[in-house]
Structure formats: C-alpha cells, structure tokens
Image (cartoon, rainbow, N blue to C red; front, side, top):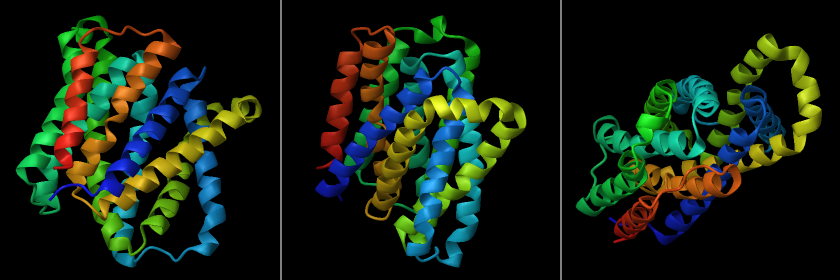
Length: 281
C-alpha cells in the first residue's frame, strides 16, 4: 500500500506550516507567552467554529482527553527545548525520533500492518533527519538539558500521534475532532501562563498578537491536515512524512537565526527525499 498522492502533497504542506510556526516560537523573546498566544488564539478560533460542527462521537472522548494532557506536556517540553537549545538541534531530535516510535507502537496499539516500502521510507526519513545531527557531533556542543528535553518530547509526540490516530478514526468527523482538540488544548497552557505571568500576558499580547494569530492558523491547519490524513493512511507513514518539516526548519534556522549548517545536512536531505519517494511506491 502506497500513500495516496493527495495525502502526500497535503501532509508535505502541513510540514511547511509546522516548521513555520515552530520558527515563530523559537524567534520569540518569551517562549511561554508566545506559546500561550498561539494556543489561546487557536482555541478562540475553534470555539467560534463549534456551533457549525457536530460533536465528536462519544467513543473518541477518552482519546481526546488523553490528547489534551499529552499536548500540554508537549508545549511545556517545547518551551524548554527552545529555551536551552538551537532550533536546528532540538527540532530534528524531537521530530526525527518520533516516527520510528510511532511505527513500532502503531503495530501493537492500532494493529496496523506496514509494508516493506513504508518501513523503508520511515527509516530513510528518520535517518535523514537525525543522522546529520549525530554526524556533526551536535550533541557535544549542545546543553545536555536541551537534548534530554527534546528526547522526552519525541516520546510525547509519538504518544499524541497514536492517541489522535485512534481518536480521529473513532470521532466520525476529523474536522470536529481537530476543533475540539485545539479549543481544549488552549485551557491548560493559558491557565498556567495566567498563574505564572498574568500581569505580563496582556501587554505581551498587544505587541505580538499578529504573530500569535499567524501561528494559531498555521498550527490548526497543519494539524488538521494530519488528523485527516490519519484516517486515510497508516499512522506511522503520516507521522514520518510530516517530520520532513525538519529539513524546512533547518533551512529556517540557518537563514533566519544564523545557526550552524554543516555539509551533512545535504545527504540527510537526500535521504529524506528518498524516504518520501519510497512511501509513494
């Protein structure tokens, strides 16, 4: 089974949007408040859409609740990773390890059967993402704290991907599931920011609201595409294809943030492209 062309193209577009909103958070002067603006803006957008959509089927509610918890932990880990490490180091580590974890767990949790081309494509994409970082010995020049947080977030990413793969399929409507997820996601991170930085949040929102809205829109559309794709293709294949955003994030980190770009990034990108091609076989 190969990935349908429409799924492939839309998930690649989602990868571009995902890398873009991560760059917004990384470039912000305050990672917690910017992440809060992004989540709160997305929550308000989705709240406005609720009257026009049916609620998700009750069978998906436990999965939706679990996803909200996992996404909250993901946001916290994301803030820590970007606080202590470069985008070009932490982003590949978080996103490159997750597809292999999803593939291994998906076979057990979702009883998915993956073909040899899909396993090969996942492996090529993961190696192409993580390999250049290891080859350049980035681990030796990055705070251990950033590396550990990024690895922990890889497990969280794999976990919520599997949870949302099951929840979306049970929801009866991927769009409704996405809208409810983002509306509920906004509650815990916004509550935390109000408790810790309530006095600063309003003023910060006045100066960064446009970036918050842009990031919110990118987040909702990109993950909405992924949730739809999870109903059309194996979770592991969608997860791997989505993580091609790492190649885009590396370019953004190099061009905008002047982060180090080594020669190993080129063969890594070639492996990622090869993985995408194999997934389409």
